[in-house]
Image (cartoon, rainbow, N blue to C red):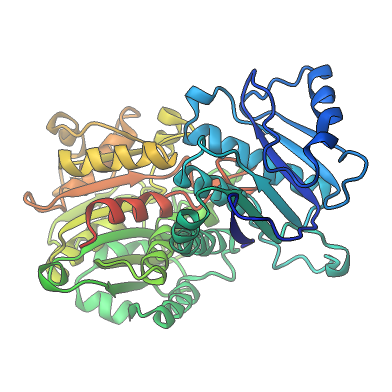
Length: 502
């Protein structure tokens, strides 16, 4: 992650020398040159050039200019468009951050100085912008042997000058820990499945102990004793044994210590579809089917690193859904930990089997204050919402409203989908308590959520977030380059900080 610092624009600037000077500009307004490096009179040519090129400062636009004669403190001026001043919101701020990071990379810049005019940008907006730049500089290149470190130029430092420097610095101390959590999630999701097997994933989570997180690993023998046969059924075709990992952060005292906020993640390290084999096209992306578990791991890292005053538990179920002579078959019946029988009609609907046992375990052993589970669960959610929103389901209006509001404010958008007993009937089986899929093509994401709800106690506040469309991308999306987005870590960290910290 880049090193970010903040300077008070009201104080005399120290000598600064770097690669790029970043200046914000609002649509159809003159570029504010207040506080620029050097004599402001030198910048008349810059203003004239902007006017001559009819650069308007629309959201997402940019202009790269050479510094005026006599200015040697930097090599390039980058003018960023933020759109209409009265329409400045998180999307405009993040769009400008994304543009800035991409241009810095194209220019080979290692250091940026951004001068923000006083009285316009709040401290929260400036930290959001800095976070966006940082998130866009993430790289996963551990397996590229040909990279030449001596010739590598990547953004290393970002300096923001503003009247809100002190407030920004305080917020950044928390934010950078959350960004580290996002980076952990991205690293996990981007790892190839031959490296990040279920046992390897479980062992990697032990690193959280250095932050004060209690980490306990439960192997297949322990899972068998717990009666988690739905989860074990998914894993039985793989040579890699399954694991459940429970991560606990005790950041609070009192009553919150007994009823933790609880997060559950689906951790299918690779999903072939099992005997119900997936098409070969795009199957390589199924290394990201552990995205829910990756988010839970990143969230626990963020909460512990920033010393959140909350009692939180993260539970992940780690399995590989493979094809072999021992793999689960369509028509198998498994008995879940909750004692409910499940007729497996499609072995590619395996994530809900894992989550069913995890939900049962959490409610019996953890006594949660509330539960949020995350999973790359259904392709139907991608059909419904595409790649902009994650769909979610909840039995609790308060929790649902909290998620929606938080997602809107940090631009990790979620959309509530319906739960209704009419859909529940579509999962009724003639030979078991339920089927794992419906016999119809319709309402695929909804019936998956209805399946999970059967394992949630009536008095338990619960939300299920289907992150299938927002976890992994073949081209840059949100504030991430190619690959894993880390969507969900910032969303849930903000949910905790706003509504559940003591």
